[in-house]
Amino acid sequence: MEQQIINAELRDVTGKKAMHSLRKKGFIPGIIYGKGHDNINVTLSAKEFTRQYKTGALSAHLVELNIAGKKEYALVRDIQWHVVKDTVEHIDFQFVDKGSEIKIDIPLSFINEEKSPGLKQGGVLNIVHRFLTIKCSPDKIPQAIEIDLSGKMISHSIHIDDISLPEGVKLVANEEENFTLVTISAADSKIEEMEPESEPEEGIAEE
Image (tube, rainbow, N blue to C red; front, side, top):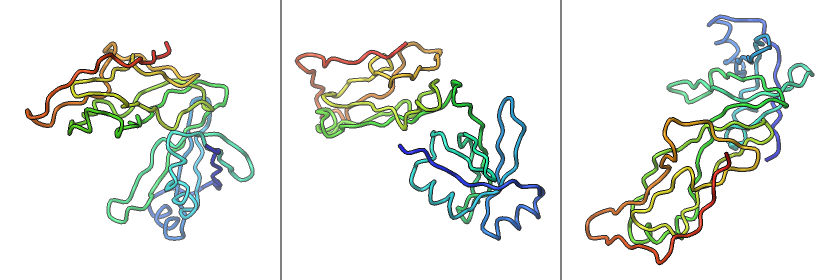
């Protein structure tokens, strides 16, 4: 995915009244923080940021911040929304050094549901984990980690050892070894649990 560029301006005002005034003028207040960096208060165009956010391009991806002509790299760490208007109230960014390794939660994407005999029979997909915590360099952050449901029958489970992580991506250690990501269970007792003739070959997660 193409790296997103977000234009920002330095902000020298604080306080509720000043923030309210900025929002009325079509701006979003934000802050950029990170280890080894001084915090920077910024403002962004609400229209521009909302447009980029709706594309999904900002989620768990490195963005380039253009702050008064100076480039900085960051991740969107937190977005505060207005409880009634559903508009962005504040944004937290985290500075990222391109050569560093970062820890981040990545969503799981379940694909090929139409190729799962268990789901075709009326089985239910029980998602145990929707995210994985990984470590990687900022330029290796995947948009999602795909879990292939092809050939999966009722009573089948997919565990962390059954998947292959993208190159350069490492799983953050979990207290539970080979934990379950998803299972396919019978919707009711009328659905017979069928076993495949042989288990499909599965990938092995990188250490």
